[in-house]
Amino acid sequence: MTERVVAYGHLTTRRALLAKGGLLMVGGIAWLASFLLLPGLILVLVAFLQRDPDGGITWAFSLDSFRQLFGITSSGLSAANLWIMLRSVALAVITTVVAVGIAYPMTFFIARAAPRKRLLWLSLVAIPLCTNLVIRTYAWKLLLSARLPPARLAAMLGWLEPGRDLLPSWSAVCIGMVSAALPFAVISLYPSIERLDRSLIEAAQDLYASPVRVFMQAILPQTLPGLSVAILLTFVPAMGMFVITDMLGGAKHWLIGNLIQHQFGQGRNVPYGAAMSLVLIALTLLGVYSSRRQAGRSAEVL
Image 1 (tube, one colour):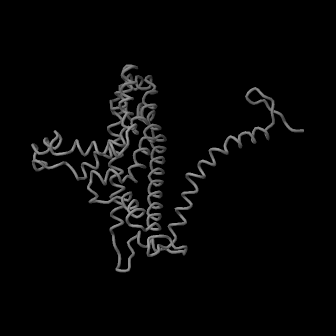
Image 2 (cartoon, one colour; image 1 turned 180 degrees about the vertical axis):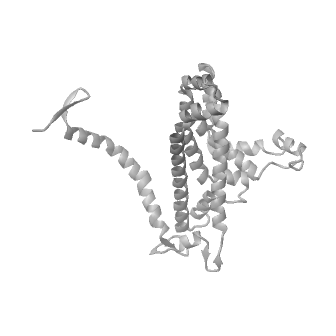
Image 3 (cartoon, one colour; image 1 turned 90 degrees about the vertical axis):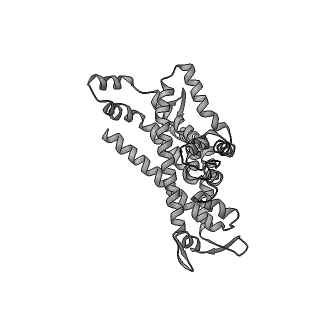
């Protein structure tokens, strides 16, 4: 006899519940399979194919793309791709550290504001997300031009020749990357900071803990979930960014995103672009894993 259970006010069986749950999951699984799993499998397949002379794909197994990726060419070894990867990781780390470092105190300021002002500040933070990234980057190109105050101030301080723009430069790229990542960091941190248990902070202060110890033992552990999400949402997009580096860096120093975009566009080497995409995915997953593991260790210690 089939065992009957009561679920959501209805008498049913475990088999019927599993069937109903499976039907509810079909849509989500189909969506993930269609737009995440299937493209990933195609990317893996294409990475191991050959490029024909016209820039298309030849259906023959080859490791040429991975040899080229690691600098193994007919003329010898080349470290150009290695430098591009290292440069991409370094810029992503700098963007993450600066964006999260700015977002952390900013989110505390927003969370401690009055309810009406809090909504206003959150709206101002989220407004840039309603604008296309290319338009925002063009805005930075105007702001960093020679006629506006930032470039004039840099010229007065001797950092720049008078009449020159602040771009193309790495500083302009970093500014553009941080400004693009900052809203994601603030929005990720806000729920954790807004729900802080003030009694733990007051208890630490009553026990004469120093400000540093109050932060490390009463505040940071409560905000670690939001902090880990903020790190992921800034590091992952920064790894594959190419629009900002093209527009504010003058395409002088390529990142891995620029290299992939070129292979699928003007370079017309789709297998090589697919191999580079796999490397980008691997680096991103490594960053995600490292961030989650470090957050777990910090939570255990604290």
